[in-house]
Image 1: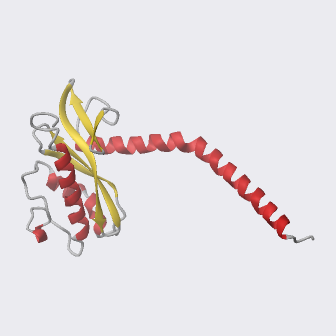
Image 2 (image 1 turned 180 degrees about the vertical axis):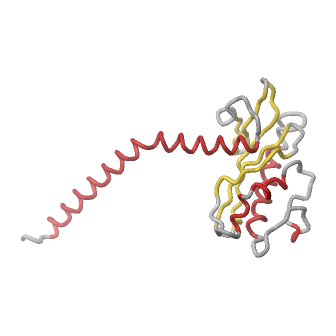
Image 3 (image 1 turned 90 degrees about the vertical axis):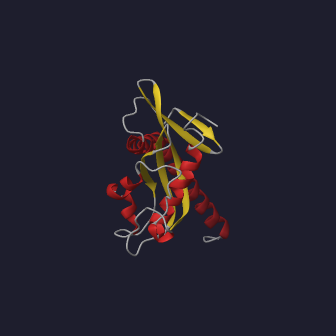
Amino acid sequence: MKDSPFKMVLVLTIITTISALILAFVYAGTKDQIAEAYRQDFLKGLKVVLPGFENAPDTEFKEMKGYKVYIGKKGGEVFGYAVRAVSPKGYSGDIAVLVGVDTKGDILGIQILKHAETPGLGNKIEFKEWRDTFVGLDKSDNIAVKKDNGIIDEFSGATISPRAVCEAVNTGLDILSRFTVGGEK
């Protein structure tokens, strides 16, 4: 009776309950800190794609077809918009890109928010020099890698990652084009 199945189930149930309570307590104690750290990282990205904003664009946004369009203001006037777009076609999964445009639809900047690309190869999409090649482009430009007859340089041996970024940028421009030139549509 000492090693009965009932006793083993009871011990496992007690251990599982205690573990669940500890995890719930740790989560409750850290969720606000995690949310604030994410907000600060997101604000860093917004500073890249909406340079010089004077408002809080992470809290000033409009929902549009499942996307949040963030609004950048200077001196109380709207000067740009930003949106988070995702391409599932990265080499190692989704690539999330924050795209910012001015009111005419020209790209102010892009920021890579999330990726799992190969270090030293596909992760070059994070390099500022490469991201800056998008600045000044708009929806009418052929935003694709040169291998696909576009205007964006890819990396030797790593075309998939830049191609996915171009796809995400084009998705972002499609969404943002409804907010530029003439206002929300």
